[in-house]
Length: 358
Ligand code: IPM
Ligand code: MG
Image 1 (cartoon, helix red, strand yellow):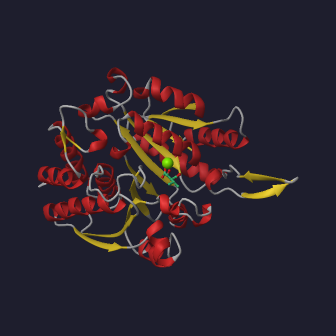
Image 2 (cartoon, protein in one colour; image 1 turned 90 degrees about the vertical axis):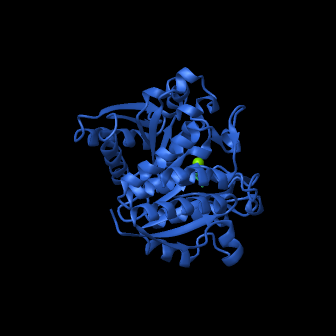
């Protein structure tokens, strides 16, 4: 366990602020219980950073992030900034911080909580027991590939992007995925579109090469379209999924929806030096400022931070167990509410979780 953890707090926009407050309250409880000292340093990102500084990722924020042990991030974006060009939007702040901190691996667990089975769009017998992890490459692929742009050709407008992966980028994400799979059920599904794309042919070749060092892990390759289908047909068969940036973006939302609500899904973005923890969901402008957002994804992201950065796995398990109990007791925020359960707001949900931690 670390005695001290320096945390950059980037609440961002919309419900980001509300759920961040919730996560900080939970971390204060953890600090009280385990004697670990958290130093929180707030900084701007996304739309609120644009409003104050004109830049979705101000230098000051990047500096604070680089001086911290971990970054906790809420969410970015909102209607107000929707009409800005892509490279000036709040989302650009998020993409840039991932790139600047070289956070090449994004871990997005999707787990079916027994008390929430009825919140899933799938039949209970399909979703029960699902426990999978999407590992998404986060700093390469079509999100960052050059050339990219919008221009005029032959008198009409064209938009284009480049899906590109270097061997070393594939190798490091594949290695990490095999390592993680080794600590779980030892099954890795690598997702690509190798029947069409050259970039996928290289992806597949490199993943196979890395597999030689991990013969105890079962490896299967799957095309993205097939994987999207198999995820709704037989989600329980998946353990770890590794894939590129764009496919991972899509599959992690799908995996999230399967388990009931995006409001439940945390994520960790890690690189050699830095780590950033954020919920998979966005800033939910439709409910922002009402104090009703589900704080669980953010709180679980803080738990991933305790586990991976602060080296305090007991505290992470405490939080996970507390959330299990609160759900078993029937407390639900609006996004996961169903008749017969008790509707609570962000603050009440957070208090219930803390009660089970202390
Ligand atoms: C995510 C989001 C982001 C992404 C957006 C907000 C840029 O969808 O974290 O999955 O596409 O990576
Ligand atoms: Mg996404």
